[in-house]
Image (cartoon, rainbow, N blue to C red; front, side, top):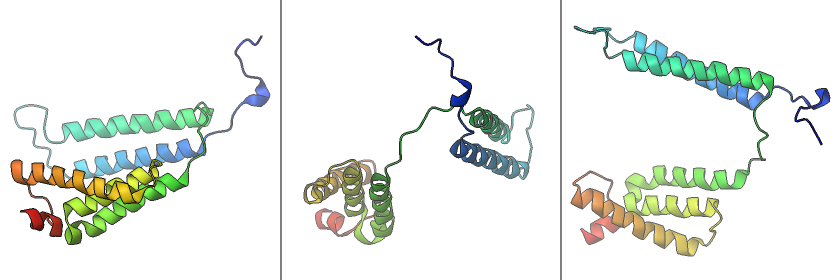
Length: 163
C-alpha cells in the first residue's frame, strides 16, 4: 500500500505549455488594459462607466495568468495525452475552405464543406456522404436565417437556384 505521497524522484518538471498559456493570458490582459486606458473614463453620475467591465475582465485574466504560472512552476497540471495532428488539420482546413469560399460559393456550399471536413476530423471519412448532408443542413440553416428571420447571409448559386 502507498500513503499517497510521491517520492522525491517522481517530482515533475515545470510545465512549459502551461507557461505559454500564462504568458498568452497575461498578454491579453495587458492588451485589454492598454485599450481601456484609451477610452474616455466618463462615468457620469456613478462610478460605473464604459471602462469598468473591461478592467474587471483584464484583472481576472491577469489573476488567471498568475495562477497558471504558479501551477506550471509547481508542475501540478495533469499529464496530457499526445496531441493528434490529423483531426486539427481537417478542421482548420474546413475553416479555411469556408472562409475562402463564402463569398464565391455562398453560405450553404461553404458551410457544408466545413461540416464535411469537421466530420472527417472526427473520424467520418466518407466525404461523398458528409458533403451533401452538410450542404443540405447548411441550406436549411440559411433558409431559416435568411428568409424566415430576414438576416443577411452570403448567397451563392444554390441559394439563387431556389430563391
